[in-house]
Length: 128
Image 1 (tube, rainbow, N blue to C red):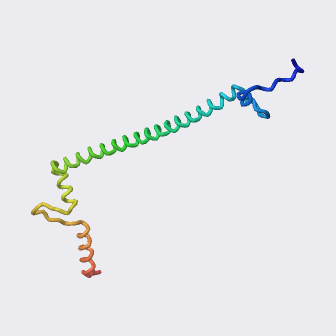
Image 2: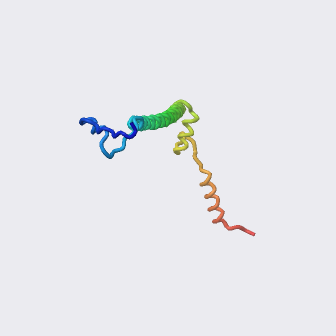
Image 3: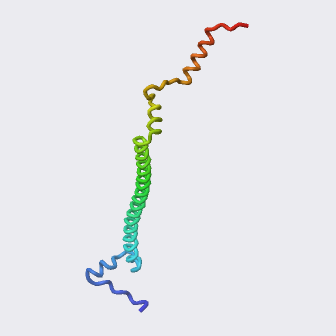
């Protein structure tokens, strides 16, 4: 048994199965390589999909925050419109801001009175 020479493989299939001078891979390794490659490909695709999901979730949170800010600002503007239409004190303050006065009301600005007084003091001589 140990000393007997082996017979060469017969037929074409036998020659392809063990060509002369080639190494044979263990069966487990030939099965493991494709399984690992397929697993890596599936993992890569799933990782990309998961990253896209996280990015979209982040965008969704940001858009919801912007909607809340716009809603809050809209409510504030609606309140301001209401007061500008219905509150006499608010209407009067806004009119004064634009320099409007009611008929019969005299306007005097504090800054102008101070300047007139200073110029009058310069023109009159002071006695000692």
